Each structure stands twice: as structure tokens, then as C-alpha cells.
Length: 365
Image (cartoon, rainbow, N blue to C red):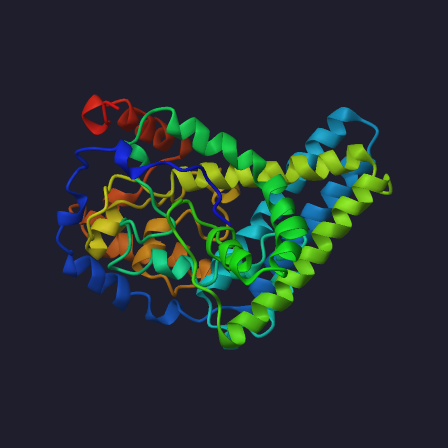
């Protein structure tokens, strides 16, 4: 599903020449050589982390619904949002993992998180890998890239605010569009192409799934559609009280907004569309390593090492901290590796905000 508004690339001018940065071979070699023993995922940790996240998330959600105290409901709602956000963030791992090494994890994730939150795994699989393609990153072919830092100032708050509507859009997608798409192959193609991807590039169009992936997609979408219809029916008939339904929507909106804020600072968004070297892609991406503590909440499941992830996309999330420590210690202070690390969220938001305020970066239109 396209999760943001149409932010037109025509609204930018004169992007920095980030794509002209040459690859730093010493950095790339160190990243590969120092992490060869860190590539194996730890299934028990994946399952324990996911299960703990959903137990906290759903448990706190029930508490928020059942409590008669507004203050307690609010606190429980925040805890639910953070727990479910962490659980949902595993979709990133699902899109990268070799499923033979973690048998059943994708199915378990869809059952526990993907279908209940109407964000099934197929919305990211087959999409996110395009973002990592060397010739696509930062170009018009990248489903997860827009030159946000070069756009007009109003695009940033709109980028965040519109994400709050994601839960309603997802209910419409699965309760309404999924059933209707069965009636017309042409409409089905539109639903798949335009409303079945977690993308921020409004011009991105998905290909129709084929073979085993199509069968998997259809099974999961059927489950998501039945769940969305059930949720709407329960709310409409009063079986699910309006207050409970609104709390569920509020928590889901909180998850979407926090994720959108994280997305806003995951890159510098300074490339206008030219192909970039791997080093240039790395420098356009962000690490927020320790000692900062809050990134563990707003960039969970390894997302605080997003720049490192772009160097080593196959590394499991639990290995990224150790990989960062090894590479940081091995490379001298002049290495571009250190230039992608930032102290925290406020500075990153201010950085992109200041960039949009620079007249040279904006179209006069």
C-alpha cells in the first residue's frame, strides 16, 4: 500500500552531488571481512523477541481498553504502541531473511502481527529488496525514496500527519478493496500495483505476484481481509464497543506515526535521482548508535544501525551492534564510516528541516 501522499519530484531543484561520491574500498572491505562470523541468525532470539513484543503489546492494549482510568489507559496505550511497533518492525527482518534458516518465522509473524495489524509480509517482500538494489537506490525506481530534504517545508509535517490515517486506509484496503478486486481482473491489477506495498514513492507500481509467492500472497490476503471485515462488523454491531475500537485505532495510528518519524530520519534524503555508489548510499543513510538510549524504542530491531544495514543487508538484526563496534574500532577517524553516525532524533529532524528551508533546494513553483 502506498503509505504517503504524492510528493512530486518536480518540486526539487539542484540536489547535492551525493551520487558522485566514490566507493571507499577500505570501508567496504573491512565491513565484509570483520563480520563474516556474524551472519548466522539466532532462531531462539528471533522467536523470544517477537513473542515478548506481542505479549507486551497486546497485553497493554487489553489493559488500555479495560481500564476505567483515563491516565492508566493512556499509559497502557503508549506501552501497547511501543510493543506492537517493535513486533511490526520484524517485517524488515522477514523481507531479508533466508527462510530456511528460520523455518516458520514468516508464518508466525503474519499470524501474530502481520494479519492482526493489517500489514502482512507480502506488502514488504518484493518491495524492500528494490530499495537495496545498487542501481535503484535514491532513483525514481526506488519504492522507498523521495528527496524529502530538497522539497518544500510543508512536505515534512504532511509526511508525518498523513501516516496517522494509515489504520483507516488499511481497513479500507482489506475490508473493501480486497473483496471488490475479486470481481474484476483490471481492478485487481490496480489494487496490487498501487495499494499493496509499504512504499513512500507515489509513482511505484508493483508487479503481479507469480507462482508460489502468488499463492502465499492470496492465502495471507484472504486472512487479512476476513479479519478486517470481522473487525468492522464487530464495531458496527456494537459487539466491540466504540471506545475499544477507537483505542485500537489510536494505538495503530501511534505505531504508524512513530514508524513514519523513524522513516523521516532513516536517510538524509538528499539525492535527486542519480544512481549512487555504495559509499554514497551509506552516507545518505543514518546510524544512531549507543550511548543514545531512546533509539532502542523508536528504531528497534536493529533499525538504529540503518546505514550499516545498507552496507550489510544480510546481517541479522542482533549482530548489527557487534558489527558496528568492530568496524568502528578498525577504521581510523578519517573513514567515511564514522560520518553516518548521529547522536539522536532531534538533531536529525532539525537537519532535514533546515534543508527544506534553503531556497536553493526548492522550486519557486
